[in-house]
Image 1 (cartoon, rainbow, N blue to C red):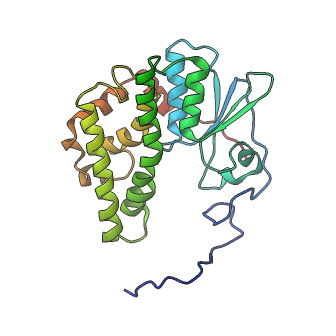
Image 2 (tube, rainbow, N blue to C red):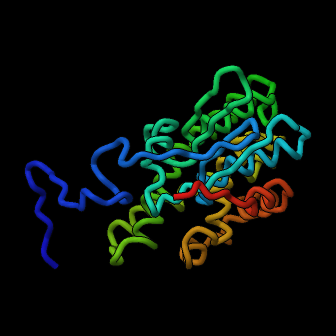
Length: 262
């Protein structure tokens, strides 16, 4: 194998006319009109570990009797580059799913970044957010831990374990080490409490389960559950199964996405 030699200045040699695909630049690639439904909340997402969190959150709110949290859920096909259309970029300039538009008030509110969307909804409807200061701080600690930790699992471990065109020992070892460290961290945490922030289910559980619970279930990358020996994390596994059994979580995973058209 030829050793890679780093150039002094990196340049990109990809196809610039593709609607989808990674580029070193941000912004609008084509004009787009996203549909709007009649519900108060408009969600533009996809069934990825990040994407499922909003649907689960909204189904949990429904389970708690919050009738004002009706939503329309539209499919953003990231493989086709829908996230680079003008309307979607107008909601989220970072071109990542999910994105939310709250049209329930006099002036619509655009919300992006998953932890922010969960926090926005929890505060708006006063649900799944601890009241006690110390518990709320603990919940926020773990909610934002997830935003920093999960890219090592998805963009690191998941990419090199499953998506990379060739198996490479160094990156697989590096990101497997970090992923297992994170699994062990959660396992130790859940050995002493029923939920992530303490005694009660919260948005931190939704955020973390959608990545780590699905990983433990073997639903993210084929063969990864065995490779990571997830059964050895018994407390994390028990928590994963408990969250998966929640009716709202099951509905959030099964909800149908509406087409945005061409």
